[in-house]
Image 1 (cartoon, one colour):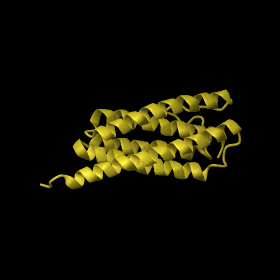
Image 2 (cartoon, helix red, strand yellow):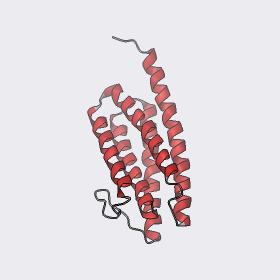
Image 3 (tube, one colour):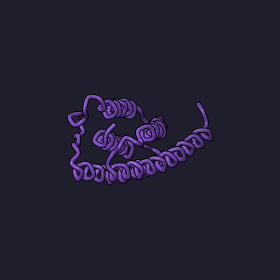
Length: 167
């Protein structure tokens, strides 16, 4: 793994979180879900800008949201796979309505953040530039925080669902 791929992986995750968050703000019923989505939009918008500046500032190629041009064939799978997973989640989110949307979104946030953490841990030693290594460590901490908050909201949704009468 190299700095370019790892940076573009983070940028791809950021773009996906922003897109899913915007959809959640418009479709979610739960105020807690909407608040979480707004937090994701804000945090990932800031990180996307930071990651892009970091890549460009270190002479590393950046991918736009629609291509894998910057990723060498040997490592581009991390970015391409992340994009594919995001598209599957977006399809599920677009299809979900009502309270089911809230559950699908929060389930996706928990699973997605867990997946990103695993990938960050797996490739922790893959960056060679100190600024990229430092940024990846900060991202890992942020993802850990986002995961903890997602689990809290998910638990809150489960508690509410358990108290509602069934038809």
